[in-house]
Image 1 (cartoon, rainbow over the protein chains, first blue to last red):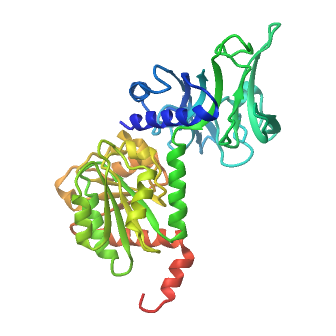
Image 2: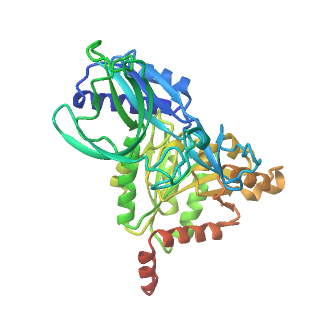
Image 3: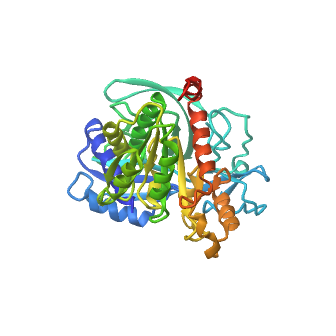
Length: 113
Length: 327
């Protein structure tokens, strides 16, 4: 449900940058979202369409780049790929994992004119 | 920091490529380099960053690279690369559309408010706790009992978050603490900005304990830092022991799990050990305290945890007040 708040956050960034970067329309937004960022891409797209209507970003495409989540396994002393927080280490089956990436929630790039 | 292996400055972050792919060994290289650029308006800046390149050279020069910057672009001109058209290639003049690399965190705004709140709490010796749970876990009852136990020795203030009504703030005031209610309306969580305003109005005393009772919701509040010293998640034994697995983000970000309503355990099939094991699968550092606001079981340990948290956060302040007779 807080995808709506995130969509508003994205729009705010776009509006703030419009004067400093001198653009009038946003065509496309590249977002980097980690699988552990607690964001549902479908819900975010829907919310963004709603909040962007009537603004400089109306009709803009959201390009969501899903990144990989990784964790450091203490017993294996190795970096492993995970899908969810409670996943076991794919090598040793243990849970002594420290999540090292996968929480990104960033606006990477814009296509504007 | 190096994104290939995580070596270099700061915390270990191991992301992107595997070591084998690049033949890269930790510590044998320096990816971070410093360079200066000039912007369209003539401003110059120098910064250090690391980057990854992918070149596709076929006569021409199309290249794509991603930067991992060690700083935030909050200067006015931003990063404008006129050489990058919509095809993401060096082809200036083909289209009016242009690419802007902005690398901005979506939650950066909230995080800035949270950082301001945190600085304010630290300056005034206020121990702020973000109390989160699903609706009906007994947060407010637990808080009213906590206030009764604490109020002889400490000032306690409470920020109550709910979609509607000020019922909870009324209950807190009746227990003897100052309280302010935030009605989030259609919102599902409190954010850093709301807390800043609430603190302006509430004016908690220096050295007090500030409880922020978040909206009953195990999903959304996880993503929003409020500037708290600790996040405390309340889980009642009338819920399932697999809740930490169902709502991992919330349990992952919490420092303490209060297992509430434990006086009901004899009447339930709730497996405390399984619940704690599930919570530790998500967050191996989480502390767990079983409590009952009704019988008082575990309340002493919870108060001791609060004192310890306060001692760790503000050692000088706690020593000073302990030295004062009668305080």
